[in-house]
Image 1 (cartoon, rainbow, N blue to C red):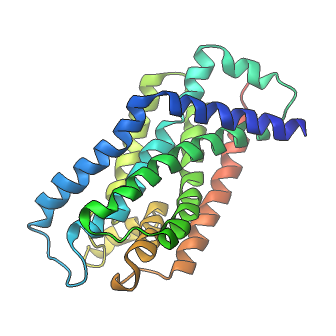
Image 2 (image 1 turned 90 degrees about the horizontal axis):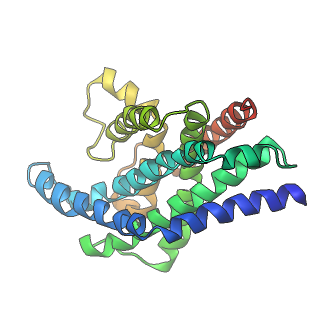
Amino acid sequence: MSELRGIYSLLLREVKRYLRERTRIISSFVQPLLWLIIFGAGLGSVMPSSTNFSYQEFIFPGIICQTLLFTSMFMGISVIWDRQFGFLKEILVAPISRVSIFIGKMLGVSTDSMIQGTIVLMLGFLIGVNINLPLIVKTIPLMFLITVGLVCIGLTLASVMNSLESFGTIMTFVNLPMFLLSGALFPVQNLPSWLQWVVYINPLTYAVDALRIVILGDEYVSLFTLQFDMIVIIVFDVVMILVGTYSFSLRK
């Protein structure tokens, strides 16, 4: 029970910190809205259009993944903040395991990311996406699976860094290639073969593809089946949880 209370306390702390920062909540839908309206309309005017959906609808699931990616990995900075202010030391000497500490922070940050992703999902009606209750019910669990592995990357990197500046630099180095090479902004079928291999080893590619299948439905010609996308995402989550808990257990 003490382990469960510790996990819940850390989860609740992360969620409260997020809800108290109104600027973060506002930016959670302003930035994706700018991507959808400005970038989507601008690039959509030169991109080949589909007979089934507009370019803005095509990139909409990718923008959701972008929100999940940037939020999940950037929130790893909370580990560095906690270390600098001494709170992490208090957690590490608490009578709970390092695994529980990692899981608590992971679930808390995942919840924050899902809140932001849900806000962006609700903006879909602005570009003609049919947002209904069945779609929301199917999308939210999928977003949770996507965030778990991404959060673990951020927490793992933050656990081995001591500088906010270094963390920000590494995050940019990791985030942008993952996002740009996920097919979020363009179809990957016509890419050169050497670049397609890079796209296919990117776990975010399968997240984007799975969200497009769920949100766009039968109108979208998917890269893979939804079942295959889910298997890849789950395997990625398991691997990153193991890596993250191990790296966190090495902290002194």
